[in-house]
Image 1 (cartoon, rainbow, N blue to C red):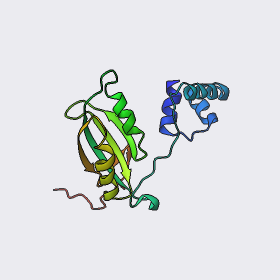
Image 2: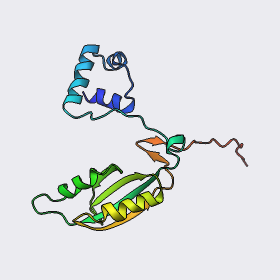
Image 3: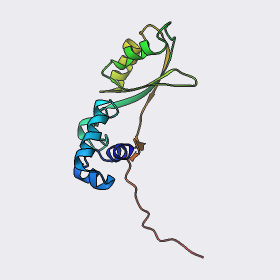
Image 4: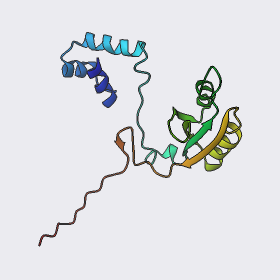
Length: 161
């Protein structure tokens, strides 16, 4: 099961026949394992990783990382406030963190003003939010094990003494 999961994480477009050949299982066994992984909630979604700098539709998107300090709620801890935050459509990721802040949110907006409005009017006004610190993403070099920048080779010849 783990071998199939690793193959799908690396390339979710692999055909069942290819996975079967790589794992020495039948196509039916592979299909059953994948169905079980999906039904058990291990596999939540299949998606494409898109380079935003090369996608003309996302050229104007602004991404921000927000550090949030919160007051955990009695009986619910951080879960109740986290649920209120992750329900906003702008929120792409939300993590409970150790260290100097409690939650880390990654959001996307149409502009700097759009992100600023979200932080000022939606996020910071939630009950339990003590403080926020916003960092705007300027450039993505690597994400999800994918290098986004074109690696240029140095065409100069080396000098030897």
